[in-house]
Length: 117
Image 1 (tube, rainbow, N blue to C red):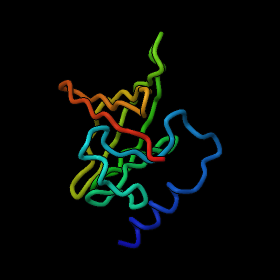
Image 2: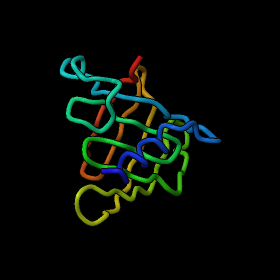
Image 3: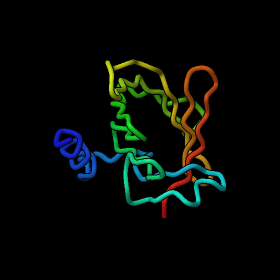
Image 4: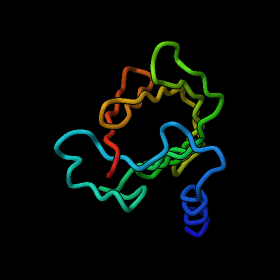
């Protein structure tokens, strides 16, 4: 538990080069209205994105090797994620939207996230 808290505190520190998607997010649909934008990584809590780390419910992904997507406000990343078990790798694209970001993963899984105010 201490290790997770240290990681969380490190993620909350202002990075030297803030990323274009940095912030706290919640689902961009009516069920997201009840999410708490202050608690990170808890059930009903916010998702945190820093310049190279993505914290979600029970997981943490380090984003590496960013590639800008031509003609879009989007970036493709190699993500190394960890939850309770062994780490896993995935490719994700993060794209700016009118209200926040879209996180697009393999298998056409799209998560629309609204920026917390």
